[in-house]
Amino acid sequence: MKRKEFAKDNKPKNASSLKVGIVVSSWNGDITKNLLVGAKKVLHEWKVPEKNVRILRVTGSFEIPYGCLKLIARKKLDAIIALGCLIKGETKHDEYIASAVSHGIMRLSLDYKIPIGFGVITASNVAQAKVRSSGSTNKGAEAAIAALEAALL
Image (cartoon, rainbow, N blue to C red; front, side, top):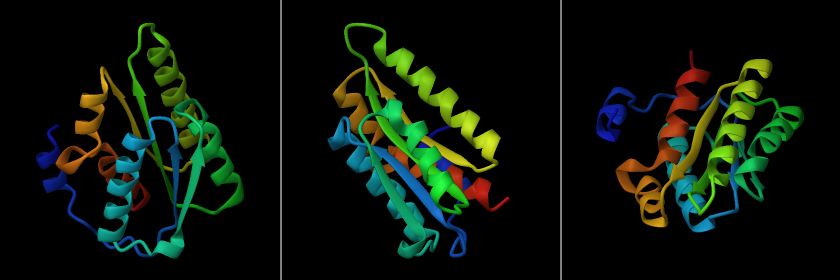
């Protein structure tokens, strides 16, 4: 689904009663910073008060599921947004990390019955990651929309 189609079907709603956690990786920080900006923009558009948003920074994408677990244990949240960036290198390391992170996040979401928006991008190179973390193709914004939509079900 293209970003414009996704956004058209998911107009901002009133999510002012929701408490939302964001777990963001510091690795590839220039990319994850943009993902965070996109997610926070969506939260603002959906009227989630800043005081209801908890941000937890972790070192890399592999640590995102643990960060989500820490937020779940400490706070009563309605949704979590997971943000990270994996860029392909010379080995399959990125594939192993992506698989572990996605399985970990799904397990937490189902075990704890909390929606976790998946904003961990995988890219072949930095240029591709920059495109997927900016403007109308910001995957952080899309992850935020998905988490909020699920929390409001």
